[in-house]
Length: 190
Image 1 (cartoon, rainbow, N blue to C red):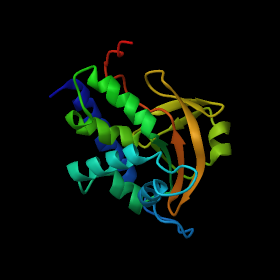
Image 2: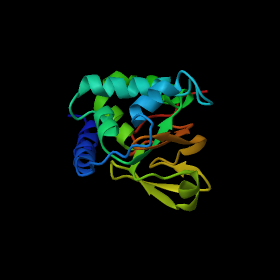
Image 3: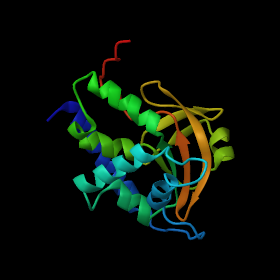
Image 4: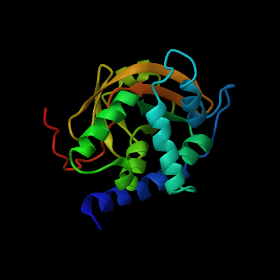
């Protein structure tokens, strides 16, 4: 088994165990995180920004129904989700492509990456800005400074849209896919 996929599998098991211990969905009149993200594509200030995020959730669901991120983010919480925008996924797909890969080639990476965009509790924009680091459900800790999150490989993610309410948490839209570990990908040529 590829060492990158193997390490992601181990992180995935830890993330699933962490999520399994969190079981309470609060109701504030809004649907769950996956439903809010799906509806976000139809209306609001963030319309059309989360198509790729929703596609990744759906692909993960089809790959592993019971342990899928969609199920976790729908039925437990509360969570804060840093959902990558369409542009963020496009950039990741371009990097994968110039390394001879697609998202479908690395389903464990997709799932672990999704879990690396969620943390326990409701963190609103002010909470995120006040924090110096954010530990995600995958167990990976990202540094944070002034609303800019730095992932494990040094990429910077800016928050584009804040405080989208869901029944079991809050969503922020970011401009970069946060990577939990260095995948050993070469940078694309210009």
